[in-house]
Image (tube, rainbow, N blue to C red):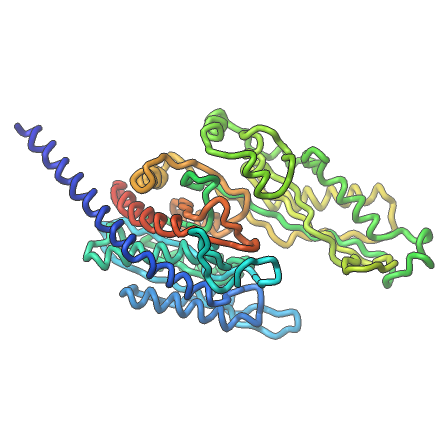
Length: 495
């Protein structure tokens, strides 16, 4: 009889829980036009953090974000970056936008979840190739086109709407929720690391888990992200004559800096993609059998991937190798050469000084400090063999570490349960080839567990023309966040 009562109670609790989610989901569906209009308002603010002329818009974006959280009853605070001003080339300082933090709930018996997001965007102009005005959210075939729609304004709004839905239905939040919203992510989050360190024993002291939704799915199947690559970005400068020279007058008599530079760049990586710098490949953590199995199970469309980027062939012809080299192997990419002639037309010039810009994506178990030495020593040794009178200078300007989480952690089990509840499928467990430095900073400084919970689509075009967020992902993603807060609340709280 006792067992029967327990079973009945569990059934009732399960029914109540399902009923609460249904009410919340119904609320989201009935307010989706309101959510689209909110995104329209946010996209209309040209919060381009790379353009100093748009800095007033960026400050306004932070104010709009703060006011929204304040209207919901959040305990909102502006926090300065570790540095308050950005130094400009002319020496004139420019104020950085303050970080917006907010706090909902302070029940010590509950977990506290911290949501990180950003509301600054990449540059965008109609003449870049957009088919719609980039700062006028336009819906076409269920897709919401606009700069920042997916990266990262819709995900930030979806988290806000998730909290708001609980409030609107007078349902108690299952966890305490904190927000950290910044406005300089697209230009490197200058000063954010120092701000997190300064707030470690105050704002972050009671945080149990950190969630980042600044990423996307790999396919049409929802995903949980558990790793990102880091990035070491280098300048290699070769300097020769005092000034640029006429190639007809001086060509054949001087050793040209550009030829030296091209020569050493050619020694970084082979045509097959093999990194030639000694020590780089040897530092990479080997692919485990468990990883290989995970990659086999991931949904991935080769033909769509090729079509999306407009190529006929890829570096690798099977899914595991391609995904592994996109996510968990380093790569060398050469981004450009400064100082060379690149305008339309012809100019017969020998540049006196040229600077190559290239990067190496970092993976476990690589260390940026070690990579800096390996690259610098290697290029100087290669350059020395050329016996050139020109001068080589190698500088590492970014040294971001990779981030990797344990997919067996309860945060990921909660993520799987939330995805199953909302989408009725199991998520793919994926990594990102790009770099989200704040994840590693949060991990190193706060010691908290982190998950990346994306709602962006695999074809959203982040940083590109015609960036979009589908209405489906935006609305169902809001439901996912609602479900996730519930699932995290089920994690046993340590004493």
